[in-house]
Amino acid sequence: MKEIFLCSICNINSGTCNEDCKFCSQSVRYKADIQRYKQKPMDEIIKEAKTARDNGALGFCLVTADKGITDKTLEFVCSIAKILTKDVPQLRLIACNGTATLEQLMTLKEAGIKAYNHNLETSESFYPQICTTHPWSERYSTCQNVNKAGLVLISGGIFGLGETQEDRISMLTSLASLNPVSVPINFYHHNEALELEPNPLSVDEALNLIKLTKESIPHAKRIMVAGGRELMFGERQSEIFAYGANSIVIGNYLTTTGRVMSKDLDMLQSLNLKVAKTVK
Ligand code: SF4
Image (cartoon, rainbow, N blue to C red):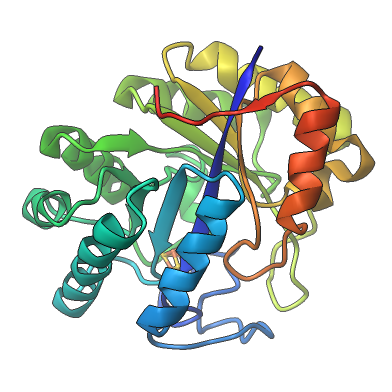
């Protein structure tokens, strides 16, 4: 029976980023109507981790909204990692804190972080149209650093930004060259405060992009459908597994609300899909 890996994300700071990524409501530039805070209280993070575990999640991702890791962020993420390793040992801890040096990644690893998520987002040539404050090459180098640090690399991107099919293929080729273990794919969730046009993809096109991702990165253990799942696929979201997805994010996303976790568990059960209990 096919196993589905569940992951939960925890936004440990929100809406504080100075970068100008045009798809991101966490940039301070666009004044999107989202919750903004500097640091989520530790007891709340522990509570979220326990809820994720109790609902079958194996991955728990500590996300910060910033271009890269500051000393303060590094210290905070390490302190959370140490506590969660002890209190919720069933979870595999993932960090997603932007561009990072090899040294910073080694520090996270020593604190108990097992995997690092850093997405390429889109193709190298389209990237300057969606972000002008940092180059795509920095994203690629951070992914290389993750591999050098011996952390598990989680890297993917976002579809529906106005990119061409050629851009999508180019991004997937770049991702394949990095050998990610897990590839999270997101579908742009439009917010009126952002300049980008709404996601133009149809459900069938989006399903085929899952298939293309799987075919383009055959060695990845997991193809994860992450942000935008509910909005992109609606009533047809159970079809994503037939197109190659074997991982999903459960619960809320960074700035948008997901389905209640039990609905996703019911969906998996109705499809005769098993929730993965161990990381393979
Ligand atoms: S660097 Fe990350 S948090 Fe900042 S605007 Fe870009 S995508 Fe959003």
